[in-house]
Structures are given as C-alpha cells and as structure tokens.
Length: 100
Image (cartoon, rainbow, N blue to C red; front, side, top):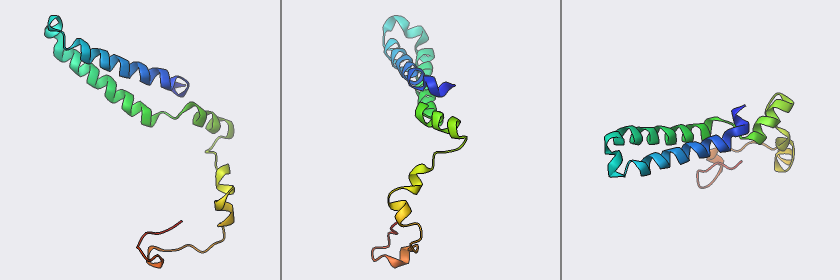
C-alpha cells in the first residue's frame, strides 16, 4: 500500500526535515533547537530508508499481477542468445575481470 504513496511520503519527509533544519536557525526557536534538529535528522533518515526499502509503484504492480518477480527480460536479447554458451571464469580473461 505504501508503494502507491511512496513519492508523496518521501517528498513530505524530506520537506519536513528541511523545514525543521531551517526553523532551527531562528533565534526565537532556540529553546527547541535540538528537538527540531533531531526531528529533521530522523525525517531525512526515514525518507532515505523508505526510498530503498519500499518498492516503486510499477514494480509492486508487476509483482502483484504475476505473484513473483518479472523475469521476462531474461528470456530476451543477449540472455537468450547466450543461454547455452560456456561460462568464462576470471582466469580466462587477460585483465582478470570476468565478462558475462
């Protein structure tokens, strides 16, 4: 459910974090500076975590339709052409970097 609102929630958290940091600079709010500072840090950290953890809406809809990850791209292009090709090891390449 959160994946549908991912962009709005993350944008709101970053906006709240920035607002907290800016409000913390005003001398009139010096009494609650640390509260604003930690609230801003917490909001930005939570936004970063949610950015990585919550799937994007398109990925979530693909998973819910099929019940598993969309692997159709693995059967097209160079993957299908090289399906039966022998695998190379790192020792096979001259520079020590393995090629797919």
